[in-house]
Length: 394
Length: 221
Image 1 (tube, rainbow over the protein chains, first blue to last red):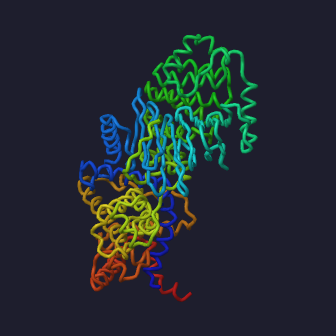
Image 2: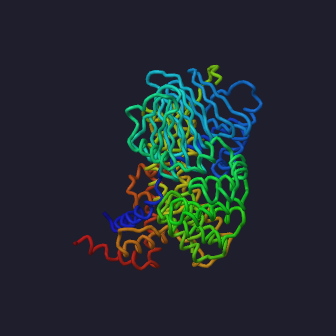
Image 3: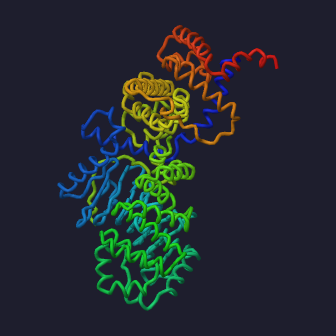
């Protein structure tokens, strides 16, 4: 080997090490697949030259969604499944899709997601938020999968309702017929759900619950963890909770706030448990009732200090300060509080990213750079990674 | 629920979950090209999965450890999908992907050079490449890498490309010629020219110069 090649290859070895964080990850692959789908949307609509697809991908996604939405609202018949179909049901109306094999899907009001179908392979539904009724006709060798947040439901023939609430990080599945297997957080090994059961999982509470909605006996595959969780929940019911309860996640934020105000906000703040304070606070935040949200979160932190719910409240207080009020110094304080109390948990990545951005907007350049470095170290592929690199650059 | 059936056929969709893969295509490269041309569901993902390692290696060799690598790699695949109908020999898909990777990286370097003419900045304002990742290599190797890259940055783009693919990546000359769209003879000529230029530019980079000067001693060890 000549000297030049020896030097070049030594440099190449260092380069391989340095470039390791840049190598394609699952996220990059996912981004590519999403980009291809948008290329297809653009090609169909002949909107623009393919050469500009990459830089305008985000805009294309929005435009594609709007076009498909317009097409949907103008049609009176049920939807025809198409490639990479984005579905968003209006606030006051559901959207129904039928498939060649007789299977059917209905996105409930204000729900959104993506649907793909192939006769030979089955269907895939990605429920981004809201709930959907799904009826899969069984065919040998064909499987459907439904993704709702971090959960995957494997289906070979059944009828069920599935819901994912991104704000509350809550997954719910109610099975009407048949049997499905759900995998995801708190049930990594797979949870079998049979007819007449409701499975719900809360990432914030780290609770899993499987309960009957009929008088059937519990199936043999219900986990001990699920049963214990259900028993715990029953024991923890209080008098106030029986008088006032946040209804299922089918309720919109306005009705939760209205119910809370009807019952008496001050009374609730003194009496209900942490989860319900969090629920009311989040509903109020979503309805732009910032005063009420602030009050609920602050009460939660006062009454239940040191708990996971209190930490979550700190995160949301930070978000409110950041998003709605532009009070970046205050946002910094809350995000730091969350990270101090719950570093490494569910919202830590988001909290670190927002802390970095809050520092940056508050003019704390050195702190922003330090947080950016932390973010890149801990979450090199996270959603704030690009911004972190910009901030961390000298 | 309304269950009226339809007869229209859809295709697979991208996955949002790490645990689930989109419906994949199975078949050799020739079949994959045919599937891409027909818009088979999963064919684009299969193309990515099969060739991403090679494509990113080529792009990294040419560009260095650069923050734009992920975007460039994706651009190579988008370009391939856009021009799949122009591929004449489907069994040579790998070589064709290499060529797109080379041309995409070259276009990026040229674009950066053009942009750099439009601004006057001090050396301390030029963004550093993404060298912040922890490495196991010795400090001297990392320094050597920095100097090699500085030399390459000063070389003409086409010479930089053949240098990186031949000397850093160890690509065979015939493959190099194919990847760069050159005849074998032109490729050899360009390699000779880039070697001469690299050695001349190394005069300003002490570690590289020392290694080149000490080359004979190393060989005798």
